[in-house]
Image (cartoon, rainbow over all chains, first blue to last red; front, side, top):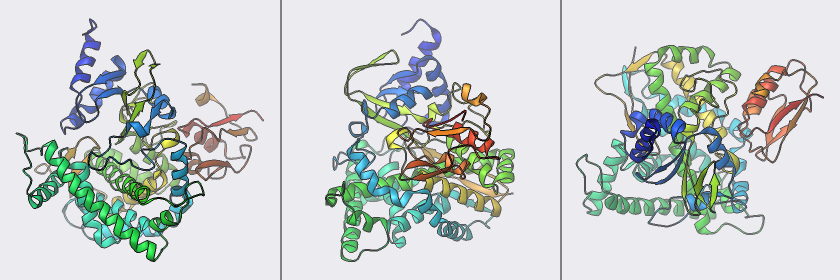
Length: 431
Length: 74
């Protein structure tokens, strides 16, 4: 324990930091501020990924760029069921580079430009179903199905399995983090399998039960991928599954069945959850900050200004803390890291570092420079960056045009969930 | 910060560090006349800052998360 009271306070914050429980969200940014100033390279023990926790922007940048020292492959928390990695996120260069090369064609800015008309159409189709209602729940009606629809089109997944995909995603990622639909879907699987969910005092499903539930769900999901791969092998189409089947790793050999499935699972989780989460947080803020909402609406038809505004919304609503594993003993800005240490690179904390961002808690739509870490940096920069931006821009523009004024409903407050955080329920009332 | 104080004028030379670039594409969104993205890397459409493009060239440079863009005296 340090003699300096602020350092002692930061040590207490680090000791109690548990990103896997929903109440963490209530103090998240205050906790990061304390750590960043007084214990920027903190040791954390609780939650799913105990290890070092980086909260300063420059430290995050340094660790993200140094892929040799900070390995993504070893840093990945593998599913206990399959012990398989996610490609390309959980693979280091040079292998990573070869996989990435296979995928990137469908994610270039120009490829996303070609999807623009479809994206607009799907946004309007979903909005038609609920946006005129006096009250609606935004996440289940829009934030969940919208990215899944785009993803299905890109991959070549049949859109009639959309609800099933959302449910699998919620079970795999959101059984134990405070997400009501994730928990309920997991309970249904437990009942079907005849497993005791082992609920604790807060109603949280036990880790042991979750592992069985996730195992069964994972088998169902891989089975689904295998059926689609078989179909496209027999009859290729213009979609990403067919691209993967036709691809040659380093121009030499086709991808193995495991490689195909491990790539599909990464795209599945990467494509389905993050855009949904960011949209939920943004609209929750816009419901409570009408001045900011109007400021955004005043600039949203200006392509240049809306681009900057969306980067600012992305900076303030960063979902992913990046896990890496240290590959050698080293001194990192005065702290000794050992080979094998898990390093959590907190992009949400780095994105609010006052050393890099003036008045970091303020939403400034014309902020410049705004070199945020939301999509990561270096070789593992988010593959879906251009798609995510386009989805957010189109969704926000069209939603706000059709529903310019809205508020939260006091009797039905938003429900947020932790870890890969997001909003599970967001009831809105038109005003 | 030195770079935020930089006064960008037409004719100044734009330099990109292709190794550092990871294709985030912020520059392309901000200054499509100057920057494009091919194979996850930046492509310069002009080697110098065009007349009228001073502001967006500087904004594009400042926005690069990898700090791969610099603008120097021609």
